[in-house]
Length: 423
Ligand code: AMP
Ligand code: GLY
Image 1 (cartoon, rainbow, N blue to C red):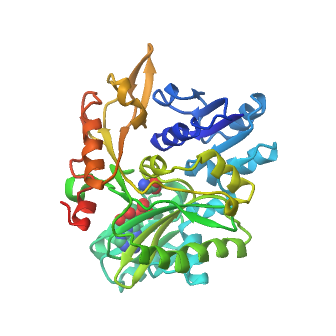
Image 2: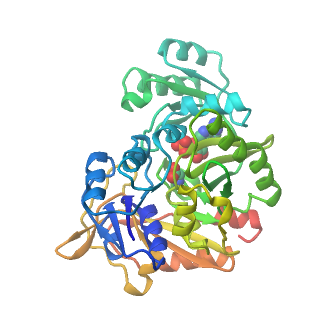
């Protein structure tokens, strides 16, 4: 079988490495992929948002199955377009991807169906939003409605900061059309947990929980990034919390999407905050998280392709989805200056002996050699029996990957170890 994967980051590399283990798959194309993914699959320079070219490629190459992982193509209807030419896909159609594509929609969905989340108001009029802020408690959280490369969420400590965020989004169009509508919501506190779940619209199977590290600097300082490292499982996500999330959040979300005529099939990502009043939804994503996937999939013992096809064919209840009872840690090596300005084009050395544990996010090939080509360059993932061993293993891997101007956080996993009483 020929499988096409849309996307080109560390998450896609983790998906490709897992798919490769299925003997039924003869070829994997990744659009656009990257210089590092090219070690494991055939990369083709077609952008993930170029739906028309993706469809033509799938048709011309007789692709049997497609996996669409990034938010943009999902929201733009990549799955709908591929299904139209008869290619079965893993990933939600545009109508269901709206759960990530519009925060106003996601918040209204949660309100209507009683799914616990921060209380909020949504606005399409700037003056009303500014007037509302005059009496709103602070800190408060201002969110652009649409996709904003992970930058559309502002935690405002003061009313002035909140008003500035609203003005930048609604008057200055900092995030383009994504900021035409905004959500202003209650500031929540508590440990954060990411839970990815397979769902075919009937059955939902959560994957092992994980913890992201979003800030650029140690001890959660500095700017928000796409994620500087992850661990799985997340020690805050106990059996009791998991059960509550299933009953109060996961299954009600699947039902709500069905009731709205937007059945969700694919990977549904729940960004949760464990508040003193119970677990609440911070955000939904319509896809695998990055870099959560780089710790979750290495712990998956079942065959990923088998599970994905069961989701597509709405028979998820019939397959086993088994995770190893072990731990994983992923340390991201980034280019100095990320998430702001950074240089690219430095030679990137990944020893062959550890290449299976290195997920390449931002690299290109130049004259046959790998060079850096992004802010996040690689993610190094170690799997071990215990979390302390996984953390140590991930840093050992990271120390063997070399490029100029590289940096990583030195405390990935420390918060989780503290929670376990092992730091
Ligand atoms: P997002 O871009 O939606 O992933 O949000 C980025 C981060 O902002 C989240 O991981 C949280 O740490 C934080 N955040 C979002 N919403 C809230 C909220 N209502 N209260 C506190 N923190 C929040
Ligand atoms: N790591 C968070 C995300 O993928 O959005």
